Image (tube, rainbow, N blue to C red; front, side, top):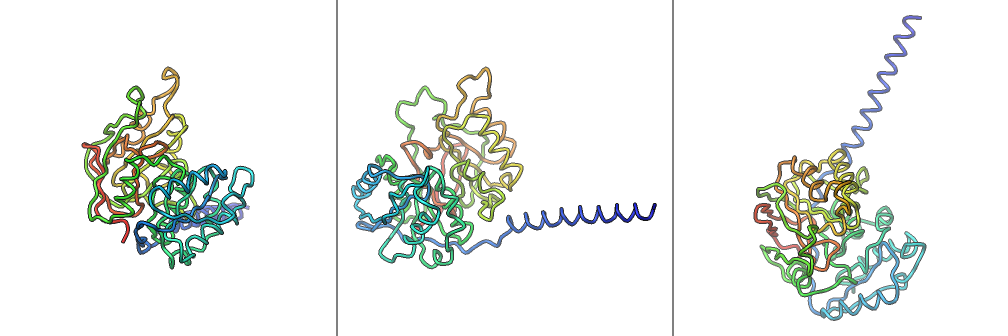
Length: 350
């Protein structure tokens, strides 16, 4: 009887160790995928044909016309398929329709670049339906933000394609956003320093303040986007590799405790803490309404991020705001948290 109990204990210990080992191996394989060779897309020029897609939320006819007008005002031509106005619940058609549109725009030789009409929700549902090898053979500029973070991240993690966190086609294309976009995807430069411009009429809102969370300077490849979308990719084959990167994050309509929860998830479940530096954009409408019952947004960001002891600043103009930087994922950049500046160290297009 005694021997039988010892045998059972040994078997239990072996199975527990084996299960732990398998989990560890699986986790390691997710985080330690070999770095893909980076792929730069071709720059945009006057008259380029822009393919319009809706990988997430559904698009109205009014939004489609607005998207066309915005891009045509910039000197581009636009193109879309009949799928663009599809609707299925809160999605722009079925997962298959949206994935088909993404693939069509990448493989269509007449299309020069791809703009997402809007974000919304649903982009991540298309990721397993894409043919990444075909996209790799047909690299193009893809630009969007918010929910589009999922696609931008997947393209970089899977095939090394540099894509852009910038305006969607229905964004407000003011002079600041246009200038940033042109300097990144139309006129290649070996170095580009991003300008700063505060949103109009926000002097009384601390969410638009710009401040250093942790001083210092750092360099590394850019990666990031919408905070919630980055969290949603944790544990998947598209999980971002944050080590030695300059991370940029933004959010909208998430209260401080939710921002806290998302940052905690990244800190506990990924190599987020091994980043070289962090640039926080605008966390629009994310501050507490009653500070007697909550930490402020600034307190949450400071408490969760400052202990990393890497260069970090808040308030860069990108995210769910009118003034938007165009940020290329996978491009080397230099961060100066003391002076609250970001500089690209190489061209993002050829």
